[in-house]
Amino acid sequence: MILSSTHRPNRVLVATSDLHVGKTTLEQVLAMRAEIETGVARDGLIVEALLVLGDIGESLRDIELCLGALSGLAPVQAVVVGNHDLFDTERLGSSLTRYGNILPQRIAALGWIWGEGAPIIVPGSSTAIVMTPAWRDPSRLPTGELVRLKDRTALLAELPDGKWITPDLRDDALADEQLKRFNNALGQVNPTCDHLVIASHFPMFQELVRSDGPVTAADLFFYSPRFGEGLLNYLSQMNNRPGKITAVSGHLHAPANFNISGPLNGNPTAITLQALSIDSKYGQPGYTILPGS
Ligand SMILES: [Fe+2]
Image (tube, rainbow, N blue to C red):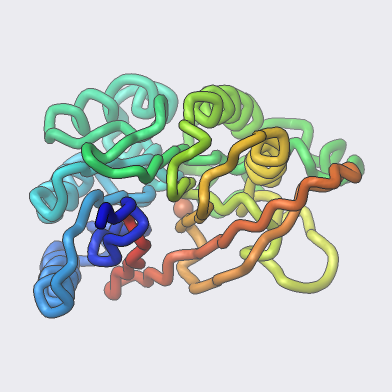
């Protein structure tokens, strides 16, 4: 009997986020690694890929230490950055230089994949992984808020990390750029793959931020609706679709797990995907295990 790739329940992906080395100690990250390794050995699992979803460390050195502490857990190791990773704490130039030059080089030098770009395919697996920071996106702020915050200084002052992100990094421009890369990567996904994993730092769906009540301006700094809408619209137009679709994200430091249906705009082709938020706290880093191929 030939078993299809869907009959390999012991293959898994591990996603972690918001490790914040510098606030969280390296020993606490190593303890998380040991817990993962113990569980994997106990349950006879094979980790196909390790995904680190941003807010890795509070300095470049902390980022390198954190990824070094996790290296070797899986044959494929990929990372996207979060907002903390772009803090210009060492005053090396700017947040944008850090994002565009410094971090891609340092992360590649450590042997990790810079996750933005083409879908990541684990060799021998039928899982496709598309990664993006899904940068927070103020373009959907209510008009009144946009008028109030149109001055960049006022916008930065509203953000808890505004004093650490240098002014050359504009949230709206970065979200636009990343959205283009994200859509491009989705266009390269093999529609017959068994499992499509979308992995981001910022959440893409309102449900993860707030499950009831109207969306506030503050909420819109914590999730990126255009990424989620683009994903649902893209999937609705596929003739063949991946068997399972999971969107996993960080940033919120709180657990969430929703079935998301869409898209909007009256399209009759309903899509359902599972959206998860990783429960990670300062001093108590968290992770989630997803089915692999
Ligand atoms: Fe974050």
